[in-house]
Length: 294
Ligand code: SF4
Image (cartoon, rainbow, N blue to C red; front, side):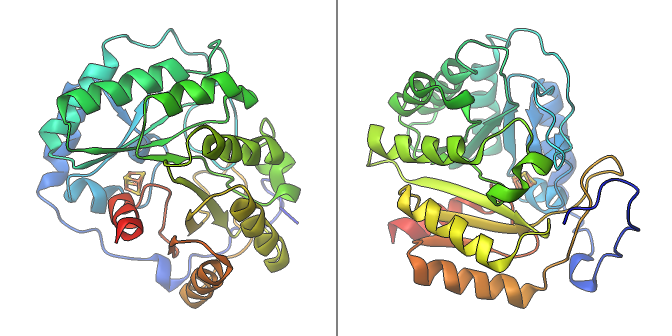
């Protein structure tokens, strides 16, 4: 059961989730570059626990089409509210910033834009193309919203040929109404399946947050659903409550359990798996992809 806000006391963070902040000199320079370029990152907007580490290694995940999301998922720290039209200059600025950061693997995600007729698919495609033009050797992973099940929108993104199509299921179906009330488990699964049908040369990737109250057998079933949908890359991480207003953590999963899930996932058929308390969809995304190719 998920406890609603105020219903139970916060569980204290276990020791494996406490870690010193690395004092990376690059951190400030990345932050300044992004600010100057008027770009958002999911790292900052979603209060990612890996922010220091990733910025210090000069990596970041770009958040396109603004910083306000039209949905209101109960796990996510990204601000909710109406957005203006996407900024037509943004795709070029993303490509330029990616080049300045020296990225060889660029991860792009967006706020959910249910207000746009194509859900922002065209904008994803433009951003991919800008990066491909400016940095022909770089690889691009896109982490897309569900486009409300709009197959044409998905096809627009696939035609731009990202190197990886990522869409997170986030949690098991039973918890959708509580965690992702505006999303549908089977719609998300269908999107992953369709992506493979549109272009079977582009691998798909998905991720789950653990610690929301899901049962092991539900996780197993979700992994099986993903495999049936043709998904070959998986991320499993600990859900962390971004604020008091968000869904509470039901359980902190010990690192050994994440290791077991990694083994189970491989055994079931995933080719690449990242599993650990701090794993996020885009955490060390380049390494995960390279593992697929070797
Ligand atoms: S894990 Fe992803 S979202 Fe988090 S800081 Fe790193 S690149 Fe950003």
